[in-house]
Length: 60
Image (cartoon, rainbow, N blue to C red; front, side, top):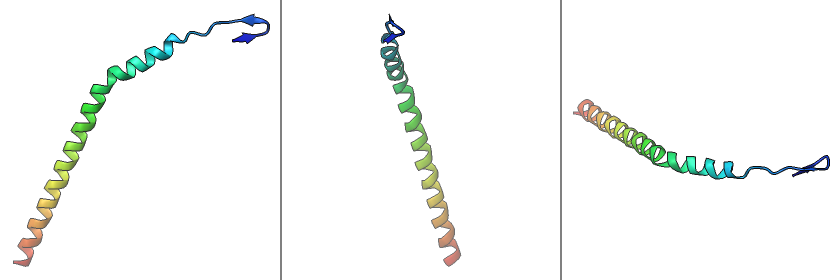
């Protein structure tokens, strides 16, 4: 970068570090997303099971 007649070097290693840090976090993020989806699906299944059981009880 040149500014006011002076040349300055910008460190580019920082970007590599941030990508590395993101990759380090990836397994934790993937696990949290997986756990969230499993809980959500389980909750939906319980709600669907509870609703249909209640409807059948009302009809019979």
